[in-house]
Length: 334
Ligand code: AHM
Ligand code: MG
Image (cartoon, rainbow, N blue to C red; front, top):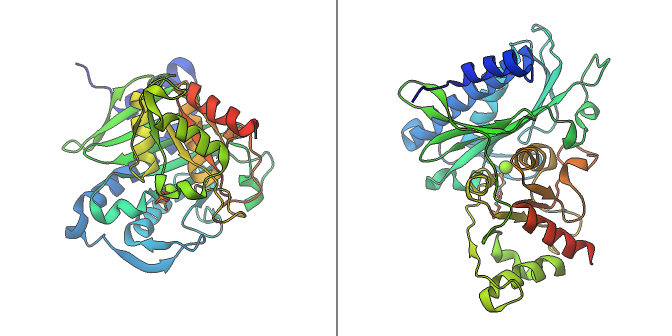
């Protein structure tokens, strides 16, 4: 079978459909290269002295792992000099990172969760990187946090890498979803799945059930009905998976369907869920919708939410469309 590299795919997309402007193409190639470097560091594990805590906390008060910081630096350094970006923002940094003046400024803005699934780093379970690309507002001279506060529907690209048994890169530029696998010997990304589609029906769900006692009634109702199985109101048995790395859970759902949930709950009424709108929910929602699935916060489409701050959290329900619609309807019913 003829192998199509990431570069060939991007060049041909640009040539045939004009769907990927040259600067965006460069951006995706640079992010992919950074993910390759992160994948290499992840693969070294204890041998590369990359495991364990860094002894610091990020803006959300979470303890940072060495790999969180290293991955953040790799993405920043890789993306600073190419002239394709105006600024970056990261889950691991309190404020935005404008492109230093010594480099030309481009028209895109990049947001990322450099190392998603941090709790799995030290136990050799799949982890990943998530990214989202926005356009700088017209006339922007000096980027500020406000320039990033655009709804997810404005994303021009989004993607993730999974560092697992295989390293894969999945992304969309608004024209379907494709998956590339890293050929570790050759060091190149090879197209391995074209136009990924999520089945609309599923018998599999993903939620951290240890929080069940804190859930709000619509989530309890929805999960209880699935747990009731064949003789319950859903009339079928469901299976459950929870990897605690959103990238890995979403990758499974893209491949064989399912629903992923990280709801808000009663623990901290002021904290709407755990996941971040700009670095996790929006990019994953874009990919899931592009593959025929759906993504809501229980009330509305995630990509329609107008962000009011960079590190905003949001409840997340995404995956097979029929299931996301059902749990959203339960929320709307009160
Ligand atoms: P992180 O970005 O700090 O790794 O946190 C996000 C992760 C998601 O990947 C995953 O779905 C979730 O946190 C797991 O949370 P929990 O440990 O509460 O199950
Ligand atoms: Mg994360």
